[in-house]
Length: 95
Image 1 (cartoon, rainbow, N blue to C red):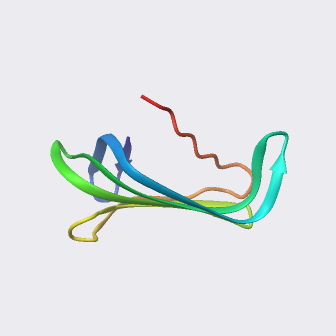
Image 2 (spheres, rainbow, N blue to C red):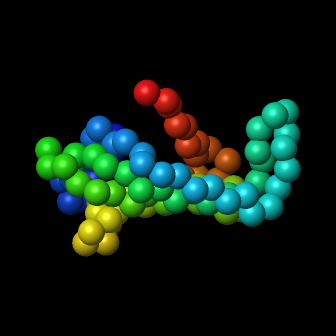
């Protein structure tokens, strides 16, 4: 889930329909990827209680993690952010 304080958008119940990942440079360290990557996904979820098709993108470039969640139909940005290099994390939890 995500909440955008500026626009008052509450995004919840997101289910990914398709996910594509690209490894852009790095190596496997202790069984995990260490390096640059991008992830793009199509999803469904509720935006302020209304079912909405979503487009999600995440990238880790040079240790800087950022994401964006858009309405897949209107292309309007619903939420996004950039984490501090070396301190941000992205976690996927299976249902």
